[in-house]
Amino acid sequence: MTSDEIIKQVRSGHFSPVYFLHGEESFFIDDIADAVEQHALSEAERGFNQTVLYGKDVDHLTLLDYLRRYPMMSERQVVILREAQEMKGLGELASYLEKPMPTTVFVVCHKHKKFDLRTKLGKVLSGKNVVLFESKKLYDNQIPDWIAAYARGKSMKLEPAATSLLAEYLGTDLSKIVNELDKLALNLPQGTTVTTAHVQEYVGISKDYNVFELQKAFAQRDLVKVARIEQYFASNIRKNPLIVTISSLFAYFSKVFMLHSLKGSSDAEMLKALDLRSDWFLKEYKVAANNYSLQQTIYIISLLKEYDLRSKGVNNDSMPEDALMQELFWKILH
Image (cartoon, rainbow, N blue to C red):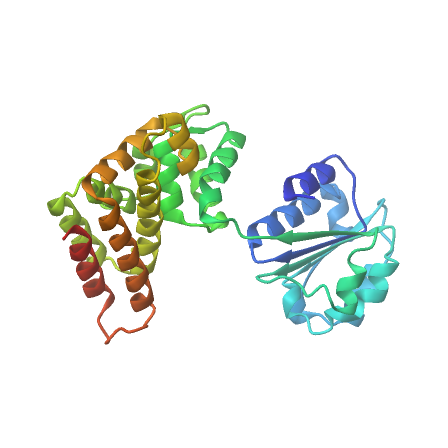
């Protein structure tokens, strides 16, 4: 089941004795755990029947005592184990998970990595009493659609450019993305179509100095604008790390490369192949394809791979990050 499907069941009052939530993406784990916390018990019942424990602070025997308690004046009790990856005796829970208390809803939040399902406990997790959910990180190309879907749930519509700007600036950190989208929802009237101007104002992205504008400047081979953005990024290198900039430019020029192979295709075919959401973006990529030949594009992609390694310390003679950025930008344009 997906996280949305699990949450839908929880909200409708259908609960499993055990929810084992594991994986690299913390957001979905927290989202499911919060849903159980909010809907399994009424506010009055939580005082006596809800327990939140942390892996580093509890041993398996103490945890089992909590799990085997009976609820007080309630149909069920809820036990949430947060940071379960830090619990040394987690594997000792296998026998309980085989026969859990029917009056206990047990939520295990195992974050930052996938749990080893080859272990004794892992094999038990496939049982009928357990909802096993692996929380995977989204890929970069999945983020824009996820942002748009979350915004719709907040009665917001985002312009494609605004969605792309948020995705480029915030990356794949879903908790950070949600925080900024909630901020937009709070500050804008319901039903507002969010523009790049709104994003720049409320998220705090510089209007003229961001990766989105950098890509546009490269597409137009605007040397002056690229130089201005480079100077701004270099003076704020912690907020604009080179590795993130390179990742964005690599994705951008990879699409320019693809566009060269789509000559003769219709705009609709190009939009589908490049996974673009509007003609507005396609026009910009066409400008870039006109300004950079196929061979130049291949060269730029190889440059980005080289400087990605150098930014990570490979074949780099202690050249600082800002100097690497300046050198890379100059080579792209020349």
